[in-house]
Length: 110
Image 1 (cartoon, rainbow, N blue to C red):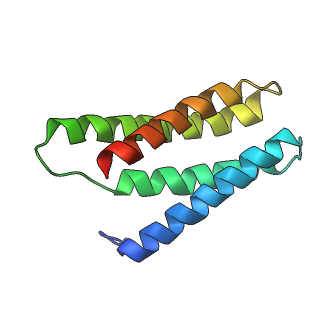
Image 2 (tube, rainbow, N blue to C red):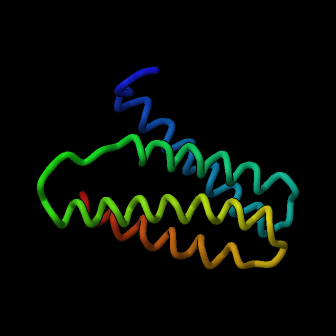
């Protein structure tokens, strides 16, 4: 197993995951049967790359933001499970929470 992935590879996997997330969520609205599978594949790729990215510094604000980012990734995975389990629109709530957390941390961390 590779200890540290190339930054370009990580970026490409994260971008592909984000595109699959977007496509799966968009197609879920149309009630296409394959949409949850697309979404879950994207969520797994996106969350795996966020988990692989580590913060080794001492800044407390960055550590807090990193935990929030990981919570957002977890919420993306929970959304995928909810897409399979329930046939209502409850997954939209968890997706919204994940989107807010990911967007907030993206702007604050960079």
